[in-house]
Length: 549
Image (tube, rainbow, N blue to C red):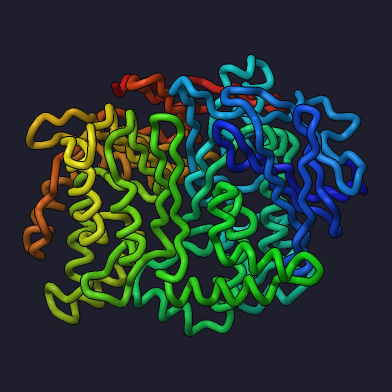
């Protein structure tokens, strides 16, 4: 889709967008002035350099609410996007309207693999590409306002043949960490593989995205427990991996999540720009990432946006964990206090985006809560060692396995729904991915609240669960594990649930992307999968649609 010798290596990605402003992210082959032309005006930013890679984030301001603006990108005066032979519709910026209508697409877990017939049979169709094909055939009024990518957009520990070939060309792949990623250069190549497919590239250039990481962005089971962290720190390669993973995430995903004002308030942004404009900010970013990993409270990856009368929270459920404390917490004290401040009513809809589902099937929830209690010593040291092995073996590390944080957030959500934190929203919705199947869970509170509270999960975008594992998930969703989980939890003196919930729709094991439609205080959610015939473009198909309010 780009010229073979184009200076534009990656992007443009349309990132933060609100009623009057937008930000466009690019990676270039060499330092340059990047010019984004919108509505007859040029918006300019110079590149900054990190470990020999050159990036720019161009701010566009002065736009009208609900407007549509085609744009072009130039480097040092030469247009690089769209390329002259492009067959795609023009990339465009669509600002948030002032009519309280939104359409949010969301999903998680996307592996990078070819799109031929054989790979489609093994991996299923890529839902981002399927969405791109649909948008090309529809008027832009039907397009999502925003796409939420809820983790695992890249897999640092499960690499493709193309990624392995790149790794083998620069180090001995028989030495640890083998085919997994090691450093910043390898992360840069991983992102390039993930985002340069022509259809995906066009989609990311024309739909705004908000992102948050999950474990595979770094490594499977990232920050499962204090024991897990110590095991990783004993390896020869982990420190280099975590520094490169967090640093590259900051560049490729995080800074585009923020408004210009939020970036201006971020000291890391200023340090990287200062060091990277005429030099290389690699050491600056490495020092930041080292500190962010060692002291989670030193940096907040979570953020929020107010989209008209809808508040979107994107909550870090990985890097902010306190693992060496009792009780351990999903969110450190600073993160928890920030979340407490922004968990308010007086909006039409409160959306809680987090990669890990807040509400699992109740049987699995009880099992994870039991496991946390036993691993902490509720049944003695011997049982604690066994519980830790179980926790790592079968990934018992969701919100349910951090009961202190689960209970605190749940109580705050009850207050929101009951109107104790401002007028009650119409809906309180948890938006999540991670578990490689999709479902809707409905919450039942003791007293009838003004808000409907639900958990909506959409996963995977393209990384289907093995068929042998699907029956286990189906059993947990259907409730057959609930009595066992409850008995185990009681035996370990796990705290009672703050409310009840049940899976009312799903599970679906297809590759999916979900869409949440909001119109004033009305909302509905629907899940789409896709079908593909040979090498033909995938076509989206509706799985289910549910009215929420």
